[in-house]
Image (cartoon, rainbow, N blue to C red; front, top):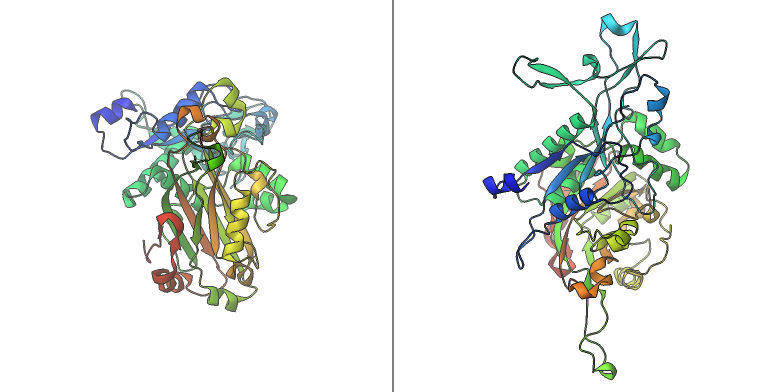
Length: 474
């Protein structure tokens, strides 16, 4: 990174990291993963300068070759490898849409995975501790397929018809060669990140990461597993196999008439240290407390939503930020001690006024109590968020239910900036990217046109936070 930036410090770039520490589990931070988190968050910035954030696109690691398919088939037995656990990295796993084998090999071989299933090359975080590790991978891209023979005693890697294709190494070698596994998937993800950056150069790395995760969707095969899961716990476990699905560039860049996207980039002060009361005037300052919470008045076309009544709608929220790690041995096991700060989101409840919502949210902010499942319409729910620096969830319900739920809160949770006041970081500001999408595919109404009318007068957020509403075609 230093060499590249020294040659051209002003060029925006995405770092493609298609390498892992072979057979080193990624279920807890290491010096390598912490270094990625440090570089991504810009800890190398000079004092008083804006930290140079950087987007790392990181492979989760490959399942090694074996002629015994039974040792490969269960991906939960192959945990993601270091440094795929890096909180600030966008970690990539594999999916495959390749199951057609060339005619000459068809009689002897058959594809190991069906179309739309997880690639048999990619590792997962299925056996990582759920309460202390981030969800990895967050996204999947095509990683190719493996093939097994009829007897089940041979497995073929890199079969051309089940792989992607890329340029060879040159010289006397082939000009083109098969390209597969999570290296191929990570290369595609890096390209998409670069494409978004070119189209929207004003977007932060945190925003590019948010847009990629937000645009991801599950394949029909993955969706079948999600839909058959019993409860939020089983659904959340499936995220550790294939994240939030496969991103789509057009969804990331465009806002269709029935798919309304709102994007915000904002600064927030997670913690504060206000003056203490007069009775303790001998001390100069009081204890470190929580700082700001941001409240967004979402410009939903309330009248239209009420008219739609029981029409199904989906509200998808993605929150992305980069944490500064505190990579000491004790902090490795506790997310609240490892991260500099954390952020969460919450949606106003039914029949709750703006004032009641803000009072409830401010009262609960930062309290170390188990998250409650008092909003069952979320796909994963607040209990599914423990570690990591990107959070994504989808609320599903009827249009009339959502009509009055027109405010979203972004609020801080614990981190070492607050727990370690001696470091003097408790007044630092952080930044985040927020992407919110309202989808009503069955409505037949141009929600974007309606919200553009309302946006000119209604879009607002406390503390000077702005929401950008893309115009049609952007």
